[in-house]
Image (tube, rainbow, N blue to C red; front, side, top):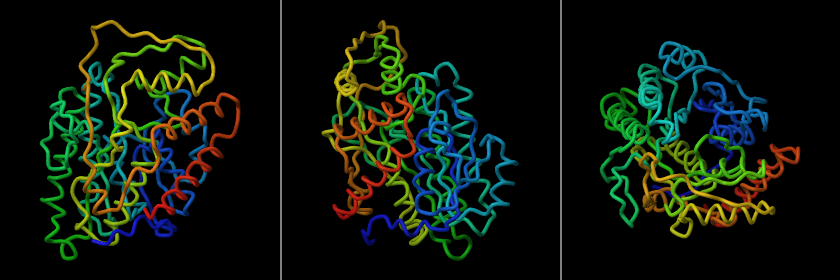
Length: 367
């Protein structure tokens, strides 16, 4: 395996199908791919919040956007067959742990059946070359270890969201072996599949419910008190471009080199970016620049993990992928975006500037 990093020229003219393009990560990914000349086809439900990144940054401009449900197999198959994408990055999901407790059926069907439908939709075609199924670090059976989980560790899922992501991994592995087996690559099929697992992602344009950064921004923008559920819980924080770079690099490798890059991959931050929730909130208040206070919820909260981190040795050694921005810079870039939004500035311009800087950082460091 050659560790050559991401070649942005590769994406020019490529037909890329993104599920979940109206979401936070999907919006950033669509913007990044448009920048490099990819033909982006998005397939997703309407943005789940108001405000949202999709509208704030006019993500729809310059892409082919289809508003539809990944649980609708026949429609999904029809779209994929008619548009003939070469690369699929499946990101559509119900991604909130607390929401999954109140809406387990929606969470499980969206995340499990959605993944199943994407894979089933390409089983009999000859144009897709690479598929990246995005899951989560919460797919692991969390034992509150102080060391990072590796791709070979057991899957699990205490809550409906976590269980749905481990099931997505199992479905991807099932199709990988049953229908897109590496031993048959180049003979019976030309599809290479991988799954990608990332930690807590931050960045401008996330307004999801029950997420720390959006909760802080909503409170600060209204001069309200910030409310925390688990102030002492430690999380692995990373800027949104970090895992997206990994997804793009992985998709490029799958397309060029096939199933040698298949299987599961972790994309998480370095240990220095693992900080308690309380520390994050205090840093955000400082960066926002106006006085603010915080408080905690009562003790009767649904179970959430206290500690979870990923071992990314595989991505570092085989993809030459490394986290580039430390937590301080990640938070600065995140607050820069939100301040621009609430000041009525062009947030797409901010995104493009941040993407450009991130690319330069990777180029200088050889990634």
